[in-house]
Structures are given as C-alpha cells and as structure tokens.
Image (tube, rainbow over all chains, first blue to last red; front, top):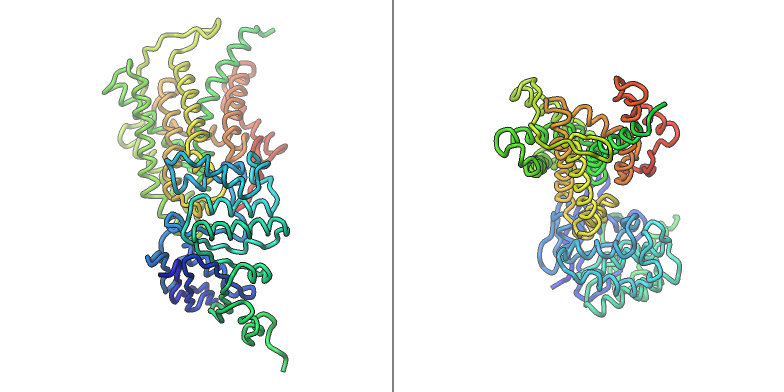
Length: 240
Length: 297
C-alpha cells in the first residue's frame, strides 16, 4: 500500500487549470523528488495533498485511507506533515517553544515534550539559539527549525516544499542529513519539491516531473533529464 | 497647594480603575490577535455581565455571595461567547481571508444593536444596582468603597490567572502560536477554528468580568457598556493593538490620567482626558506604545 497517493487531482483557479488530472504515488520509506519548471503546479499539488485547498475532483489517500477534503490540522494529526517554501514559524516564540508547540499540537497532554525538544535541538544543531525568538534567526536557521518542528512527532509521510531554496551550503547539508536520518529511523516517506538537482540526485532514487499542471514524466533524474519533453519544458521549445 | 494626601488618593483610585479598564482592553486585543477581527459588541458582553451580576445578587445568591455571583456571571458570558462564535462568526471562516474582517465588523455591530435593544426591551431603560454590603476599607490613610477595592483585587487575580494560562499551559502556547501564524498552527495539527472559539469566549468573558465587577460602581443599564468600550479602544490605541502588556500599562495610564484630570482640572471632563493621550500617541507613535507595525495575511 502506498504511503501517499494522489488520484486524478484537479484544481482550477479562474481560467488556470493548476492541477490537471495529477496521479502520483509515494511508497513507504521512499524519498521521491518532485521537480518541474516554475508554475508547473508543484506547490498546488502540495497544497491539495495537505488540505490547504480541497480538490475540484480526485482523491488523496494517506496509507490507504482517504483524506480528501479534510481540514489541514486533521491531515497533520493523521501523520502527513508538511513544510512551507516561506517558513511559518511563531516569530515571538523561542526555538524551544516553537518545537514544543509543534509537539503539543498533536500530543497535548504528553509530558515528554521537553525531552523531544532537547533531542530535536541537538539534531537541528540549534543548541546555542534554543532560547532565541524565531524572528531573530537567519533564513537557513528558520528552515532548520521548521524542519525540526515537522519532525517533533513521528509522522508517516513528509511533504517538503523547497526545503533547500536560498539556504547556505552548510545548513543544506544539515537538512539533508535530517531527512536521511528520519527516513532511516522512522521509515517515513518523503515527497521533496526542489530545484536543486544536485541534492535531488543524491537524495531521490525516483523523481516525478510536473509541467503545466500535469505529471509529465517519472523515473531516475538522469532518465527524465534526457526526455525531449522535459528539456523543452525547462528550456522552451527549440526555435524552428 | 495640593496636599500630598490628595495626590496619593488620586493615584490609588486611578490605578484601581485603570486595572478594570485594562480587562476590557485585554479582551479586545486578545480576540484581535487570535482572530484578526475587532469585536465591536464588546461593551454588550460587559453589559450582560453586569446584568447577570445584578440578577444573581438580587434574586438568587444575595450580597454576601457577591464573589460567587461574579464567577457565575463571568462563566455565563464565556458560554455566551462560545455560542456567539459558533453560530455567528465561525461561518465567516469559509469566506476569503480578505473579506473576513469586514463580515466580522458587520456581524458584531449588528450584535451590538440587537443585544442593546434586547436589554432595553426586557429590563426597560431603568438603572439597577446590585446591593453591596462590603464595608469601607482603609487604603493607607484613605477610605475606599469596599466594592471598588474588591473589584480591583478580583481583577488582579483574573489577570494573574490569564497570564499564567498563557504562559504555562500547552493551550496557552497554542493560543500564542495562533496569534503569530494561523497557517503554522494548522500545519502543526491545531484546530484553528476551535482556538478561535475559545479565544472569543475568553475575550468576552474578560469584558463580562469587568461588567460584573463594576456593576455596583457604574450601575446596570442597557448602554452601560458604551463608555467602557470607548475606553477599551482608547487603551488599545495607546498600548498598541495586539499587545497584552500594552493593554495593561495603557489601562493603568488611562486610569491615572482620568483620575488626575478629574481631581486637578475639572471632573466634568473626565471622559475627555484620555482622548488627549490618544491624540498624542497617534501623532508621536502611531503603532501605540507596544504595537508592532502591522502586516496583512
């Protein structure tokens, strides 16, 4: 059974068909890359899967159970965790409090939150900043913290929207290690949206390519990179 | 020359009334920071709190159990707040984010008119006062009406509880987080609509508590929420919308200014002095003393 399945998802915004019959399935323990030129509908797909929008038609399944049309928080509680391109942290709360909020949202009465936060502070290497408000962090540190918040409670599937965009190489490496570690330790599935082909090649055995709201190709990065349709989608069609 | 005694007495009464104004402002600012909407019917929840207090003391519990009446009246307003949010405000959440605060303004203004008319219709344009048999208390060398001192102490305790819940409970953490990123908390798995309901309940309960506490002092009538609401908004402007410390400090500041203005200039203009401060703040520091520059969405 697939960890995460999108079946025939469609979503229209005005005249723009942002998702047009998107079908995609991520296996348990898999780290799948999702690539495509700007405006291909990658973030729309992420938003449909995680409940930001309800699809016009189609279905989303998490570990075989339909989660179509559920509210964002319901989907998060069922173990599908996402990160945002623009980090959504709690600016006036400290690093530790951000982690605790993420923990208690899903485990309200559990007292182990403090210990889990300590572990995550080590894993994110944010130790010296543990009591600093999130709004004082750099872009990369925010990305790390957001990732840490997502990992506070073990989920079954993580959807990461551009986790490496505009982040310095050292922190990129730390985020990469966190993903590999969580994937290995929890057997969690990942769907990673990214433009960083070097990282995608290293992290994802299989990638899905989206173009103009549709799934255009699937395979290893080197396979899909040779397909004429994919090349044309990224670079534009050759001039006649 | 003014006597030191008069200055001290004016100061004490200013602080005491300021803390009660702060309750009102805190309710406005708290609801705004979580729900991103202004509840214009705040004064009507104050009014309902005061009527509940009057009815409980006059008909059911008697003046000796005034403190129990205050707890029951506050809880009643809290429940009414939950019901109001669920029936009138929650449906707004299905609308686009940009128009939600417009809808909320229309709905809460309509609620204001409806509740005020309802109170006039049911209880008539009369003024009631719940009897208080609290003795005069000596604060230092000054005699003070027992009801005022009791209201002050009660308000301080309520503020302490409010602060402790926000600071030390996980639900307080969820409330603070919601004020900072509504999308973020949903990603974390928090039901933001339920947080809204609780926040609205707590916000109007603060107004209801102020109404119940001030019932013996400012009396009970259909439009008694008006003046306190205006003061609540003055405080919010002075302290900065969305700032909890701002609401507390500006509340006490307003109490002091009114008190000193009334004692040393002219008591007929008591409700005007605050506006001078509001104008000054708007000119010198438009975000309020503790407010942050706003950003939509």
